[in-house]
Image (cartoon, rainbow, N blue to C red; front, side, top):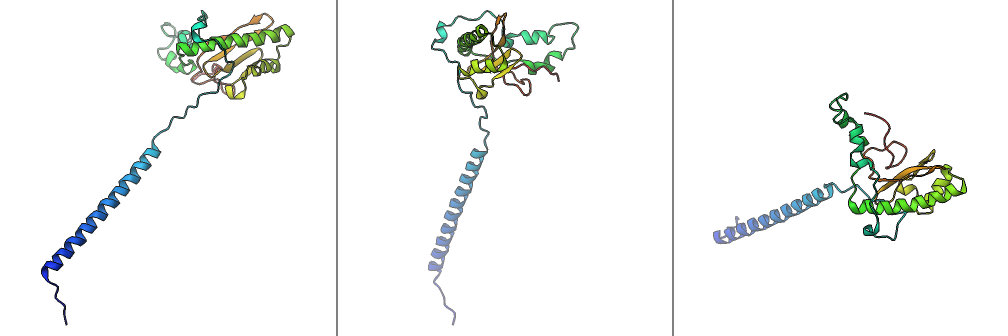
Length: 203
């Protein structure tokens, strides 16, 4: 025998079911949107640059360090050499050699780099007085200041380079004297060396 449900009760039940389904749909949609937002956040690009550790640290403040008068590779020397404004060079020569440019340094980074260069020259001058400027001795001099592989140290045939965490310091060591140059890391350094060695190749 069929059972008849009063209309008002049926309408109330239908409304309750609809409300429940609507609420569930909202919650599920919220969960989907929340999951999508989380996925988008995790997919956002993260900075890949990790600053190098510091070495050859000086106790002097940047204000106490005199500015160097030596030209640095990031102050336009390379671009002039690359042929900018030279009538005999193709117009795109400078752009094709921009990879040989060194990065810009802030005034503070340059000052701290100059202080590190002073310490490095002191260590290398000690090696010069000993009469030993071999690659191993130059590496040992840099190691005395805490500069190792993690600082991009490269030494070869009297040339040395290191990233102190603030700037590149590179130069030459010979019995004629010790030179040093403070500059930014190169955009594309010489393969197999370190961040402070200028690329000798070409594009």
